[in-house]
Length: 245
Ligand SMILES: NC(=O)c1ccc[n+]([C@@H]2O[C@H](COP(=O)([O-])OP(=O)(O)OC[C@H]3O[C@@H](n4cnc5c(N)ncnc54)[C@H](OP(=O)(O)O)[C@@H]3O)[C@@H](O)[C@H]2O)c1
Image (cartoon, helix red, strand yellow):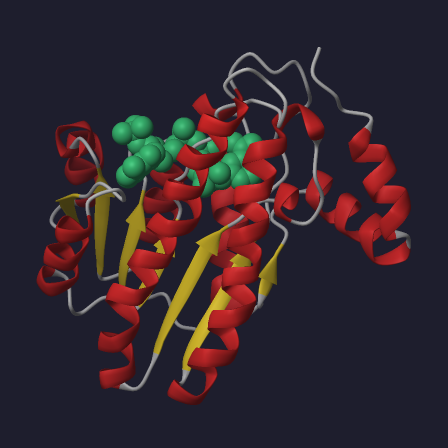
């Protein structure tokens, strides 16, 4: 897909990967980037950087009416990157584990689903488009320390597969993005090796440009995915050792 001149929307554009994605699309000469965030005042530096190409959009994934309004106002989107997400950092049996599971499903699954449902009809009307959802390598295997988050991302992975089938006849490409650990607010406090959001964003935009369907944007996710393909039960056991401290 040609990024140059394209109209893009990035959700969670004030976050670590989201900001870096907006910058990466600008570097690739995207024509217009809608940068969506709950607090759109946080987008001022990106708007300045874009010199007219970045349009700030106020968007909360938990606000269905807001999503419908934004879809109406941004009907020219050709590449939708559903990046916004949360991780409560809890396990299934933690005291607040059930609440965390619900909150994560609301944002990561139902919020992303609502965005896809709002934008797909417009892309279908035009006869083309790309929907790229930022899932996680943890959508493919559960890590018990963040078990509830993994469950929401597994639902997100299934959403990607289902939408891909539904939207293929309408010439809408559905792209899955499966990062490993990235150095953002979401992983603050985790003492593990992390990829830079800038490198991950570059790899995502390169993957989109090259027409890759499932993007593993850094080394750890590529290694983990290779293990899952070779020996899924080994991957399950290895990630299963990552239990709450
Ligand atoms: N960091 C990692 O290791 C990693 C690995 C794999 C996948 N991911 C995924 O990558 C995506 C981006 O995460 P990140 O690492 O960049 O974390 P981040 O810096 O915390 O960014 C998350 C973004 O999502 C937004 N968001 C949260 N709830 C929202 C809602 N209800 N409506 C609209 N926006 C909302 C946040 O906005 P506010 O600032 O308003 O909260 C923020 O802009 C997420 O989907 C995450 O699951 C991250």
